[in-house]
Structure formats: structure tokens, C-alpha cells
Length: 322
Image (spheres, rainbow, N blue to C red):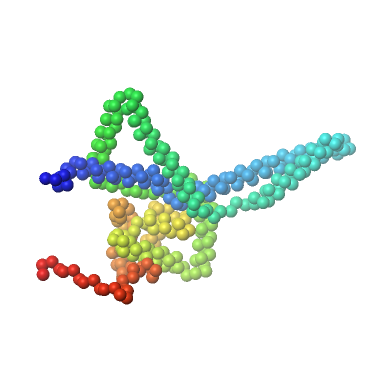
């Protein structure tokens, strides 16, 4: 019997499968993929809003201080009939400081939501990933250090515990989810929701009330048809939301609330499994039944099956049993 014919036992297979699921889950967490694009965008906007508020407060404080100093010097000049050259110079400097800070306050104006570059969102995600990778490396370094300085039993026990955890997990993958946006962050960046609501209201007034539903249904249809072409049964709602938010749409929606948005557009949603990840999504067969036709791909993504000149048509494969 050759080594290739030797099959691993069920215990080894179960432990290997569990180790793979742990590796995928840790990579998902360490890569910062549990944080949604919306949360990162809101955190960037919040940091800029706080920096703007601090700059406004600083210029207001300095302008008020200079104004008080100038007022005091003018009162002394009125009482004494003038100022000495040094005090006169201080009054001119105070007046210039007031004008300078008032000019900067006028330039700052009211805070407006900036256009955030996608690269800034990726940079913030990379920073989160770097911090989480350091957190993962800390216990590993601790085990290695303890094994080297104290006793090798530490390494043996940690390895045994890891193998036991993988064996217990077995062939049950972890659900790779995206955490909801914190409520305090939504409250601090309510200007985003207001801005999007005003834009959506203008679009609804200008266009048909159901235009956004038609656009969403067409987007989901193309995504599900593409997934079917890739031999997948459907698309997860989280993936659909991330694609839309990359295009600047539905930025005020959270992964937990987006399935309700899909249902409001008459898109069937249920718990499906895609790439061993179970979550709410849109299945190809359910969407076909809802549309009463096969989901269609956009024209530029339809595969070319026409026969090119000079090519020979492949002969059909012989059928078994004939």
C-alpha cells in the first residue's frame, strides 16, 4: 500500500477542518472585515467634524481674548488721555489679532460633510488590522517566551488546548458577520443621515416614487445572475450592501437593517449559505420565482458563446452506456 492510499482518520479530518475554520475566522477578524464601510466612513467624518469644532473654538477664544485686551487698552486711553508707545503697540497687535481670527472663522464657516476618498477608508481599515494583528501576536509571543524561560510544558499545554478546540469545532464554520454601527456614532454623525435623506427626498420628488426600488431590483438581479454564472446559489445581503456603499449608495443603511430594505423592494430574502457562510441573502431560485423569469446579466457581462471563424465545433462526448 502506497502512502497516497492511506486516508486520514476521522479525528484528524475533524481537527483539520476545525483548524481551517478557526484560521478563516481569525483572518476575517484580524483583517478588520468585521467593521463595515459605513462605520469607517462615519468615523472619518466624525474626526473631521471634531477637528473643525476645535479649530472654531480656538479661534473664537483667541479672538475674544484679543478683543478684551484691546477694549481694556482703549478704556485706559480714554481715562488717561492717551497711551504710551509700548501700550499703543500692544493695542495695534490686539486689533490685528482680532481681525486675523475673525478672518479665519469666516474661512472655516459651517462644517460640511466632505467627500471621503475610498483610499482613506482602506487606510483606516489597515490601521485596525494592524492593531488586531498585534493583539493576536501577543499571546503567541507570550507562550513562546514562557516556554523558553519557564518550561516546555507551557508550549505542550497550549498546543494541546489548540488541537482540542479545533477538534471540538469540527466541520462547523464560523459565521463571518459585520458588526452594526454603534448607536453613539450614528447619533454623532446624524448629519450624514440628514444629508442623504435630503438628497433622496429630492430624487423622489424629481423621479417616480418607485425608481429606487427598480434600481435596487435591477442591481440585485445582475448580482445574483453573476453569482449563478460563478456556480454560486445566491448573494449575501451584506455583500450587496457593501457593493452599493462602495458606489456611494445606501450609506445610511446598516447590515442588520438592509434585508428589510430588500424586502420593501419585493426582493425575497432568507438565510442562505454562500462559500460556507450562512447569513441572510437572495437565492437564485427564489429571485427567479419572484421575477417570473430567469435573472438577466448586463450586456457587457454575457459570455460570448458564438463560434469564431476558423474554429471547429467540438465533437460531443460519447455518452456512457452506449
